[in-house]
Length: 95
Image (tube, rainbow, N blue to C red; front, side, top):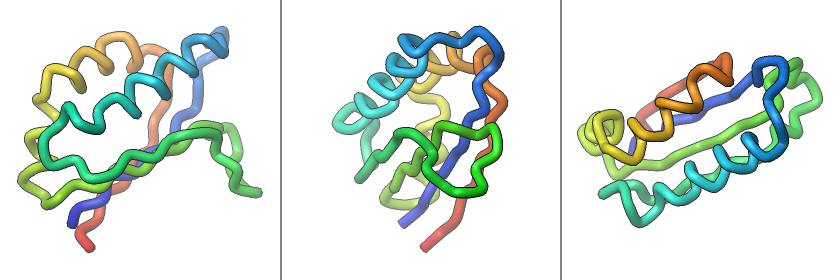
């Protein structure tokens, strides 16, 4: 199993509609990205979250499947519009 996690700090001016759109698109990866077992995204409710108000975890079958996720057209389409709106922190681990 391979776990990919992320936190987003939204750029000034990002709307609630854009945040909801990001959440919808990320959740829609389930069933579209082969080998993606679980997707969980939403508001970061950590007490010490700072400005990183959006969080997510994706669970893949293995590291090789995760590597394929990066090139997948659905992921690339999301990155095109999302990257200018966020300052991300990411982490990955094998479990």
